[in-house]
Image (cartoon, rainbow, N blue to C red; front, side, top):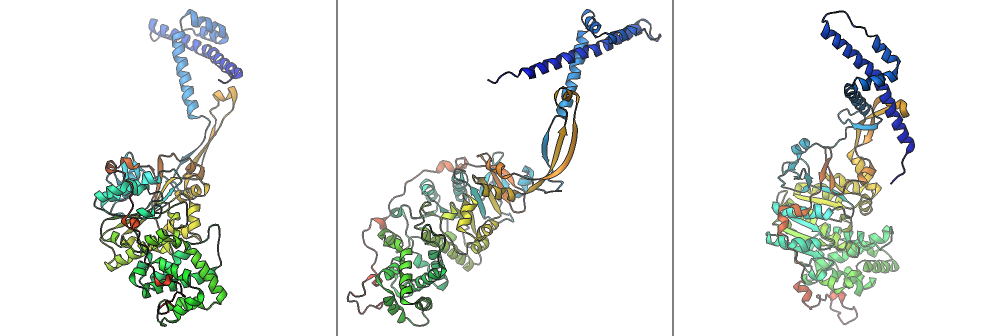
Amino acid sequence: MGEINYKKVWLIGLGIAAYLFISIWLLVPLIEGYNILKEASAEAPGGKLPDLSYVMTLYKDPFLCLAVLVEDRLYVPWLIISLGILGGIGIMAYSYRDKNGIEYLPEVGTHGTAGFMTKSEAEKILNLGRPNGIIFGTLDGRPVSLPDTTYLNRHVAVFGASGSMKSRAYVRTNILQLAHCGHSMVITDPKGELLRDTGNFLRQSGYNVKAFNLVAMTCSDRWNPIAEVTDDTDAQTFTEVVIANTKMPGTKGSDPFWDRAEQNLLKALVMYVVREMPIRDRHLASVYGMLAAADPKQLNKIFEKLPTAHPAKMPYNIYAQANDKVRTGVVIGLGTRLQVFQNKLVQRLTDTSDMDITLPGKKKCAYFAVFPDTDSTYDFLAGLFFSFLFMKLTRYADAKGGQGEQEVYFLLDEFPNIGSIPDFTKKISTMRSRGLHASIIFQNIAQLKNRYPNDAWQEIIGNCDSRLFLGATDVMTSQFVADLLGKSTVRTINTRKKAGLEGMFDFGDISYGTSQRNLLNADEILRLPPEKAILSLRGQRPLLLDKMDYTKHPLAKKLVPQQATEKEWACDNTPVSESPAMLDAGSGHENNKFW
């Protein structure tokens, strides 16, 4: 317990005593005078005024007032009047209390018009209580989602620091919601928990469920990236993704000369494998085998025999212009980038395809991409998977007149960790018209900026008409959100009054003005309650929401977790088909078309 402030107690006691003394001195003569007038009026109505000299005597002697208060029993009316006066003083003091505060005036707009969306405004542009699309959260206990007729696109940028319920309140909730709506979905699942918890439910709901699992490869469906390469454009995308996502850990940059040289060699090898090898040998292991089994001179013999119009010829010729030393360095560098294919399990995972990446546009599918978020070794496979998903689904939609039979929603949790996707800014800006919708989910601005530098990260966020903020722990993100919410006009109210006993009867001076203020400052955003979220829609005021835990969704009760099991291919000990490219050039294979 704190120490007693005797000075404050003494001042309060002195103030009470002073009030009692003054109130008795002022009120008792008034009460006594009222009684004299009342008695005179009763005895002689309409007569002359009675003698009030006694009242003046009371005013001259405060102690006589005290005696009269007790003897004439005037304390009841005195007490009533005193309490009334005290109450009035209290009300006035409260009204004119010391304050330095702010009052939002967005309708004034002198310094800004930012303000939070009201419930009535939200009901005009959002679905409240009858969700039929992506769920953002709840308002007064009712789910909030975009209506089918909205003018907004369905791309969502989700800001959420670790522990802000990105998975529980957004990804899982919307897996259930998309299943309710019957839309196809592609889901990144860094820990494999989403597949475990929702995979069985989705199968029972009529979904074709597949998983490209680089965490537990033996439980994965296979996917062959080379099988997706059908022309020069595909090969270009393929090589760009591989080069962009196979930087050595810890390096900030590299000489673009070596990157371009390795990219040309890789493109030549890919087009050679696609056009010249038998179908069973068209996989990445064959590409790596050619690098591992041949030196630059042997590679030169292979490509010299190709016709001039062959799609592998031109990129190889560009690579071949370098001297022998440089070409050797390029082969070693590219081999280092693809060294994961020394792993037999990786070879088997990518030697054929168990999944059709255009199928989500045709029928209900749920594809899970299980990629480790703590290891960048397989970033290029993740980047290839999503690059070709976007590309092939877009082409399929175009072939169908602009949109496939199914809308496809991408729930991209830990988006910066799935590998760099070339031209993603262009892809996300053109996906909407093809019925492809992306939720870009990341922890903070710095993470997204690191993966997509040179303002590409701003283009990505700018292409999302909906931005959902779940929480932040860093200043850069909180400041970005503060700027996003905008600035408002506020009324400033300042009062001044005297301190001490003088302040009891000084109601102060009040001044009003207007000023500019962020709707929420960065520090206030950092302190956002963990159950709250902020939704910002293009062209609208932000809306403060409650997060919706997936367990509140009606379909949550149907979830039955199921551990993934090993696939049959992983139990088959048959080795990956050994392509001629993997054979040693001096092993007596003179008739081999490679050598």
